[in-house]
Length: 192
Image (cartoon, rainbow, N blue to C red; front, top):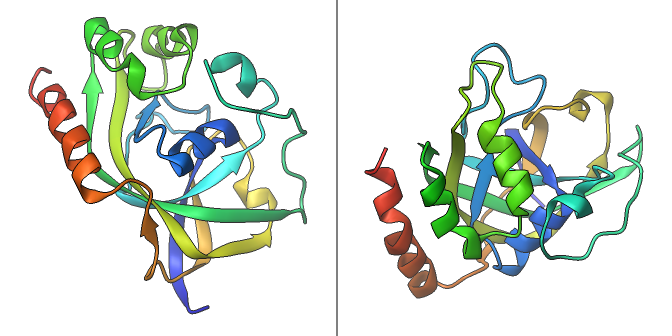
């Protein structure tokens, strides 16, 4: 396996990573974590590896998907990375009706989205949420490395020291289906 230096991991609940990996979901909705800095969260990277988290209550925040509660990663445990994403575009939504319209496209519960939408702080206004359309690919080879304290905390982005080459990765949904989804969501970019 050839390695590429300085990769980025996007921390997301395991159940959401599973939805992306299965093709059930191709969007990410995010407000941010405690350690996002004074400007708040943004989709700062357009290419990233899905870094699954074991947040113990994630099953309460989604409408579907299987989840077995486990303690958060401990130092030295093996992390397994299986998917890479490229964000086609990202936008901040500020109209709740837009979120209602995309409800079939994700697994988050309405209460979770409402909490994120209404939350204010860390440079982010109430009545808004970030959405990214992502193209998910399965890595040709899984990538396993030990969990370290540098990956901890309530943050969305983590620096991964080195990563496998993403060449040979396989798109989860085919080009035609992804183009149709992209067209369906295109209007969200112009309504804000």
